[in-house]
Image (tube, rainbow, N blue to C red; front, side, top):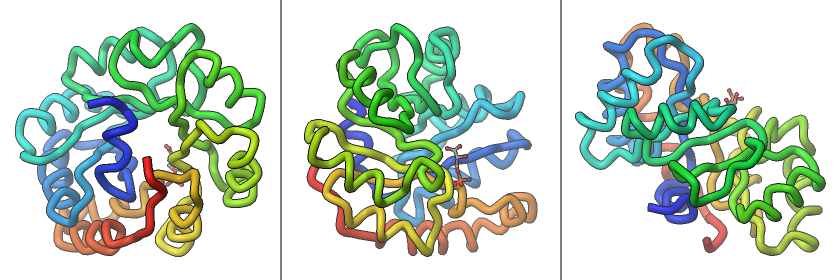
Length: 208
Ligand code: 3PG
């Protein structure tokens, strides 16, 4: 699947930081059960690649991706682990949409957006969304950059997600709020499914 297709599978992409590999599969299953099937496992813990491998192999219906991919080598490594897409907080120098695992690059300014468009990308993570101008910045980008669509991430939560999703150039949002650390540590998968259910009911979404 291309990144455009992946981003319209659910309104919210959970951003996951998994410390204990044993949590990966039950956490992913809880999210998928709640309707969030696109999962971003960040490369911020030593077990992240193993989590991607297990989630990819064991969770039916999940689209498993990697986050915090900040260079071409990491893009290759997550591809080898089975990631179906990857997300970067910024632009990876030299990267293009077709030279590896489907990539969602991050941007925070018009100049970065123009560099990403010049490399062939049309889908971007606005990061950190709340600091980089939030809803106002996305509205301002809509007219000059009509070919660009966004997944704002960073400071997005249950309270403001609907404001972002109502924008014509937002296809989905990303965030960690659907998998709170205390719920993961406690193995409270029911709570995570219920947060995912609320998040997956969020709409409308912009047409891809
Ligand atoms: C990310 O990694 O993309 C963001 O740090 C997630 O931000 P959040 O924790 O504010 O949702």
